[in-house]
Image (tube, rainbow over all chains, first blue to last red; front, side):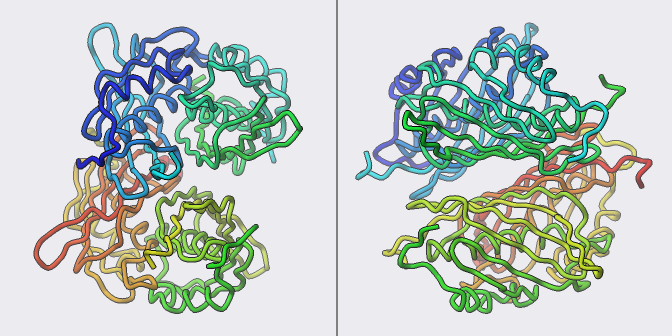
Length: 144
Length: 144
Length: 144
Length: 144
């Protein structure tokens, strides 16, 4: 994965994460971010739930989209969300959740990314809950 | 829009909304829900923000997806999320936000829905921020 | 719908359509194309079928994507496909098919579009078979 | 990848492919289909082109969607298309094209699949042109 000069390192991604109030409220923690990949983690808490007590689909989307975005900044610097989609495979259950994003194609103007969200149980098992895709637009130099 | 016998009325949708801790935290309020349409509203607060102080993409997704789901239950009763996608047109700015979901096609097994999210400013102006689509699976009687 | 100076008129869109061998093979005919909307039509023929004798999903995609693209060129001139999605509501049956594309948002770099495909029967009835969305990238002046 | 009793073997998939007039017109050839994966191939011919002489986006969609469907029948028997999406990374150039579909999750009612389309040049090089996703609904026994 080639990176351009504006690409972000782990500390910059951690700083970006901390500067987003919603990410802080979710408890999103950046484990790694480099070379077109990013891994985040967050613990279950009741406020993250939908009516049946599972992880809310909106938070599944938020986590997938954020992992996609953080993967993208490691290759392409500042980006903005254009399109996002996700498929939900099973209910969002877990003591904590991890989400791994990766860049599929970093073009001159667009960055194509994918991510997977896993639920982790007490016994160490990990289940795939949902996967998603995001297309991000690079923010041109002159607009920064 | 035809509805089956399990369809939800406004009070049931409001109850569903209140039973979801994340919806309460977001401040989501159900304005109307009937005949394949639902309208929700929520006020801006700082915790909803991304790094630049706009509405977080995850919350745009959450609001669109919830409006789609609430529109679906008015025709088809209990449903579960299968696929969601959204396109983001401009930064999520507003004093408050409204989101309108509608059922495009309510089949025997699937419900296809669309939603639009608007940001509302002080002067009464309304801007389209994002639109989304959700496919929901009907939960069969025997599984309830 | 505002258009930029590179926007295409109906004759240019018809020329574009004729210059694409696959569009000619499909029998795609451009009925109208202006102000962010385009309407195409094509007749059923056996070669367009899948195993059960209905319109092949690939041709549903082709028709929706083409209508989106032709709507986009009326506002934004030359574009290239970035992302496409579709939802299929019912089997592709009809004596002929029409597809209507429209621009939802024409930005500086991206054009967001939607389209609907209808099957037309002998009795004049029209049924919605599928709907789709395409995101197109504007081709910058210097790249033309 | 577990399969149910209705799953198709390679010969049945080849028969399905031959029974679709559009697949024959495209020249789609099934190389393998088993255990949730399918690989197809087809040669370039001028009729497959868009205005600039590259593979038409509609045919990129058709090939991706077909590979997804053929992967799905190897685990789940008869299915019908519900949702399809694709991202286009570069122009569709090649002497011939291959497309590989795989099942991500085969549920009781839905099958989630992904596919990648490659263009192959004279020198043996292979380039990723586009990737796609399809959600297919299983056709219940009683409906067959």
